[in-house]
Length: 209
Image (tube, rainbow, N blue to C red; front, side, top):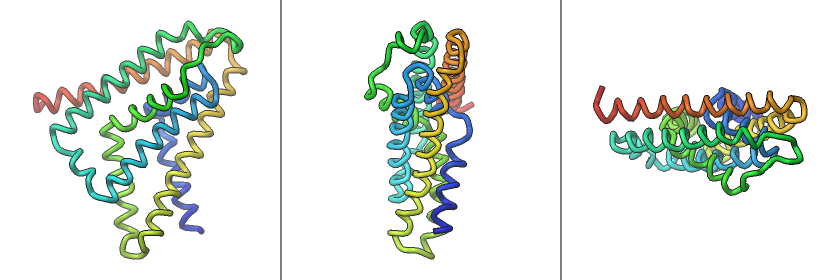
């Protein structure tokens, strides 16, 4: 149980640093509430499960080829740029709690999934993290233990996602409309910033800079 809890804590630690998903969760929590913010996290979780399975079965190495990395950096830049611009434009819908216009749950889920699955950093991240877990446990435990330890990491990630959804959605009640618009704008700019970084990485690969 102690090892299981340590992997849950690892999942929490891995999800905590600010990145595109956290920025998207904050944005949706402020604009649309808890459930929409959580759906972003669930969409991201699905992408992370795919990466974990890819690492486990060894197919993720295909995604490290120059062509696939260029494609993923470019597609990731497009997804983040679109999400960031949409966030900036949608600040006008951050009016009163009663008047807010909500996106569909499927759209927010899809947004979280696309941001994660198109992020080469996520691929390298899970290759390093879960690859290390496999290397550390595969000689000591059977496949059932490997499954539970992978599940423990994802449980930690889910706990963080729920926490982010709670904090971002509840903050709507604590700030003025102008402050909420400012926060939504800042999160949109951060997503655009990540998009620029992704695009720069794609250009470097294309032109071999």
